Amino acid sequence: MKTHALFLLLLLVLAAPAIAQTTIIIRNCYDGDTCTSTTGEKIRLACIDTPELKGNRADPIPAKAARDYLNGLVAGEEVSIRRIGKDRYGRTVGEISKDDVNIQELMVEKELARVYKKYEDQCEWTN
Image 1 (cartoon, rainbow, N blue to C red):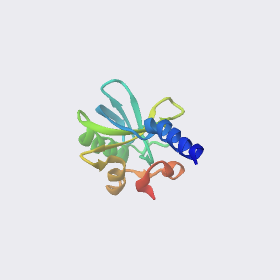
Image 2 (tube, helix red, strand yellow):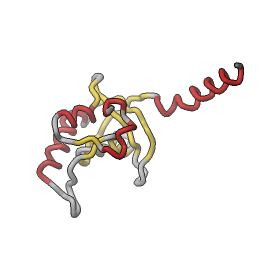
Image 3 (cartoon, rainbow, N blue to C red):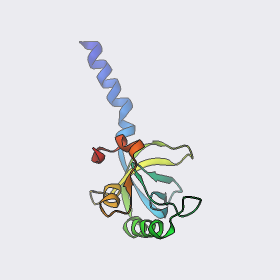
C-alpha cells in the first residue's frame, strides 16, 4: 500500500510542470496557429491546423483571415498557456486561453481552423 501511495505522489510531482498553467503576453501571431510571446517564445497552438500563408500548400486568403482573427484576440494580451511539449522546430506546443475561453476551440468554432486529428488527444476539448 505504501509503495502505491509513493508512486502516486511521485507521479503527481513529476506531472505537475506538464499540466501547470502560467500566463504570458503574446507579441503577435505569425499565422493562425503560431504566435510569439513578448519574451520571444515561439508557440505552436496545440490541436489545431490552419491554412498556410506560404509554400506549395499556401491558401493565402483563409490563412490571412485566421492570422488576423487570432492577432485580434491575443496580440498584446496576457493569456494563460498550458505547455504540452516541443515540436520538431523547437517551438513550444501549447494550449492558450484568454478570459477562460480556449482560443484553439474558438478558432475551430469560427471555422478558421480545423482539429489536427494527429494530435487531437493533447486537448480535452477535442473529445
